[in-house]
Length: 186
Image (cartoon, rainbow, N blue to C red; front, side, top):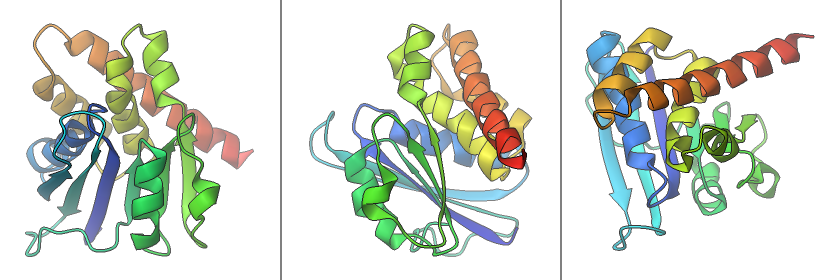
């Protein structure tokens, strides 16, 4: 891996920035890689468009802005519609399957993987961990940052007292991705 550009998009309140921060922290602190994080969000705290841009590299990152994401993670249809056209034509799109229809902005050559992260979070009785489910899914599908590094990053990034819930959410997302990959081999 030379350099991988990642963009996480969604709506304010979905934990998009935290998702990007966990990926960057996992790569840079727990997986001995270099990472940068930039973020963008609307003037409202909740409900407006927001994104986190993460660059992960084996070498120091000289330019911290994502130009053409190699991996796009979207939690809302608006984010998919807005950011999918910017993707690297051989990139990977990870999307919230219950909230996003990637066929509306299909980009030829892009691999698409969906997960019902909100539904999985609701099964855990805490809808707000949908972003952590998505981090686990990202970890499995991308294989960019070691699983244990991402788990350590989740544990260090979430509020004290919620670590077990968030690690369970992470594992559910990772396991969903593993099953998706295994089913694709059949």
